[in-house]
Amino acid sequence: MMHTPLSRTPVSRTPVSRTLLVAITAAAAATALTSCSDSKGEASATAPRQVTVADVTIAQDKALHDALPESIRTAGTVRVATDVPYAPFEMFVAEGKQELTGLDYDLGQALGAKLGVRFAFTPQKFDGIVPAIQAGKFDAAMSAMTDNKERQAVVDFVDYSQSGSAVMVVKGNPEKVATLDDLCGKKVAVQAATNQLELLNGHQEACKKAGRPGIDVQSFPKDSDAQLALRSGKVVAQVQTKPAAGWTAKTADGGNTFEVVDDPAAQGGYGASPNGIAVSKKLPQLTDAIQKALQALIDDGTVTKIFDKYGVASIAVKEATKNAEVS
Image 1: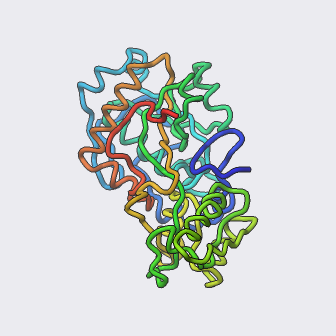
Image 2: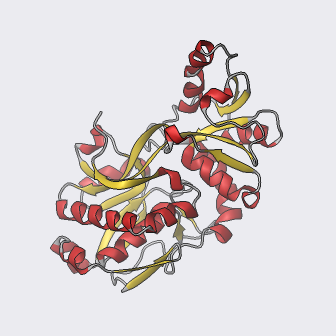
């Protein structure tokens, strides 16, 4: 399978989510992932007056609440589909339990509080999410879904992140890696059959033009194998999706083993694409209200705090856009 950075599609799941999730969910979620104060798999219809997410207390904006579709105001709930687990976006608080946590879940609770309704998350297989929205089973989806033109034909997106590939190194960055160019002539780990592998192979020409040796690409069948090579010093860096890299650096050994290289020229990662909240085209007022609520949470710093909680502050957008993908 091709490993498209955060391209959540029926034929292209990000492999790192499956190779790391058992360890992440069992070992880290219980300690590092205490979500908002009322974390539940699916919540009741009554929306609380305030919700605390990432140590920020969020209250309802009456004007935004009044702008919601009447059906949503009456129900008091936005029915949200999500595919669990997919770290760090959606996870179970503990293995075998149904309580949810993760970046998407926290952001959903913050948006719900701002809108004065509850974002009730329900697990749904990824390839069935968009059809379920079209069928009216859900109002929206928050599942690290890539905003693309094909999906825009049947749902609308409110875009909240921009993510691609990133370079992860050991803590302290002893090789002083700052950009992809710094990988020329060095051993670099990557998972086989991924877009990250294509990224490294595609950069070989740049190394050559710079008069430097090519990247010594070390391909591994699993992301966890590539990570082990980095941990053991067999390579100087690993390339993976930026959210996965950020989450790994945040949680592995209490955050003491790895760090992510933040290239100023690629803040969201190399080859970044927008990820959005998918909303039913039958509910344009909901799309507009979510967009305005998200912008308010960006402006007051809440979004940054939520993303930083999961080690991925750099992929948060500065402006809440609608249907940002134009290609």
